[in-house]
Image 1 (tube, one colour):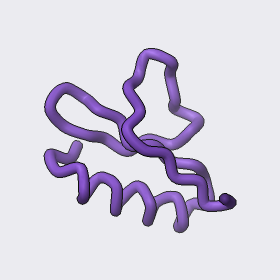
Image 2 (spheres, helix red, strand yellow):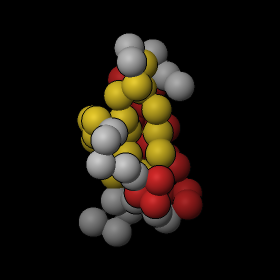
Image 3 (cartoon, one colour):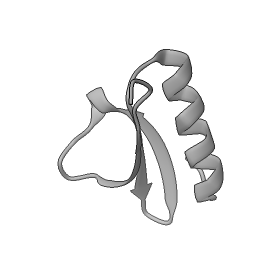
Length: 54
């Protein structure tokens, strides 16, 4: 869980490049979290998406 959006975005991009999977930054309460596309649920609020193949 991250409190700063900039740190969450940087970690999501790094994770996407390392694992070669799509990652997403989601809003959780007053913070942010990074998940993979496989864990995506329609009830989550997506802030950014990172696709290493794009």
